[in-house]
Length: 399
Image 1: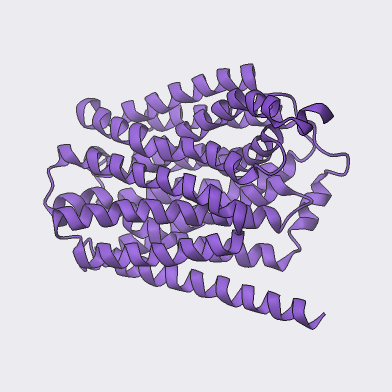
Image 2: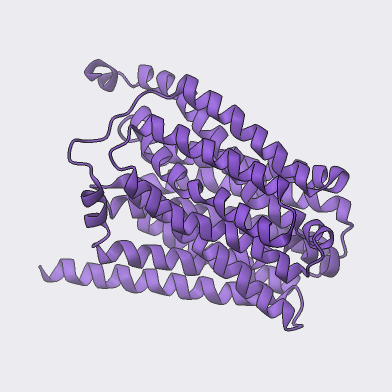
């Protein structure tokens, strides 16, 4: 191990397959998380509920992530990281197969909650595993590689699942995700190294990390700010068809372009986070606000509206990478929990964003109104971060 550290090339070579397995997990999770947005009108029609009511399915998955991320990470504090990742992916796979079999909207809400439970813990533990196999000084890029699976899902997995749903029914999309989960299980089992936890790791040490108020400030800012993105993206399909005037068959193309934007944002965010974490968070917030305002102003026009959606994809992932790195820095004794809390926070934003976006749509304000709501949420999140950073620097100067 010492020789490998001195010569980074063996580490880079050794990390490729484990990072590929983690990226495949990110691809599977990203497909199921974002595919629901494109399938929302189909679910609404098939289960005989309104689109805002169908949006509860998105909220349920997000709440599963919010609950599962800290809970499962804390409970499994002493478990071998490889074994834990295998268990989490198995639970994810079963949750998606249950979603495909749900007979009513109520059962689908329950199944999506179950499918969401392992999401945040997988990314949290996977981030630590990725940093472990990648070696010193490559944490940001290792996390970005795993997250690239999630963003590539928006380029390939989400559009394809939307097309599958349009052709064969929305249930087939969740079956396809279940198959992806099975393939990920095989890849994790074959390529991940064993990774024991530090001797000091325990449920108690994980809970002690939660006493850091900065951790909750960062998580809260992420939840509020990311709610802005999800307020719009949760209803992207009806926005494109009802406001922009696109045909339903062309919606997957825009979803793929959004995924391209997310992929660019992930790669960019990883490099920026390795230079300055806080600066990356602030850049992510400011560009997210700008993209949401552009959607609100230009969403009725095809080309400008689509470009604004792509810009939102870039900005959201720069923000996500910055927040994940920040939360890991704020919980050095429990990095898995910090990384998992990032996904818990982002999916709290998912749940709140989908709910708030549905609220203004149900009030008759139209499909562009959520963009203004989202911009307001992102402004609040950015303000929280700015105040927290300013207070933290003032305290450091006073010491």
